Length: 77
Image (cartoon, rainbow, N blue to C red; front, side, top):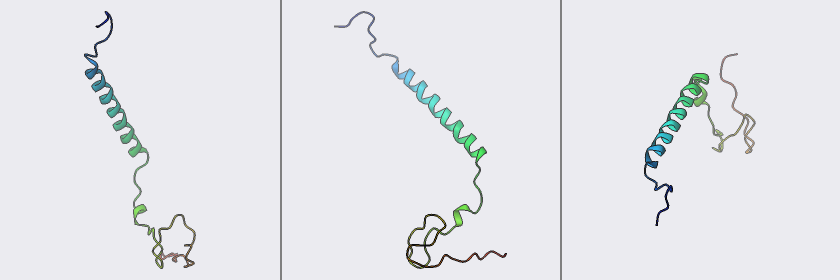
């Protein structure tokens, strides 16, 4: 038994498609503007992230917990 005025659910697919499309467009615009505002800097991915003596992953710039000295700066200076 259906009541008069009750929605039967027809047409909700096009509304959902419209919402998803708008959402994806907004996310794409945010990605484009984010890349323009914060471009990738060259050389950031080349930094060694593991300790040369024990192989543990290093977080931050401090010394490794194994006690190995930090690598010396090989750039001229």
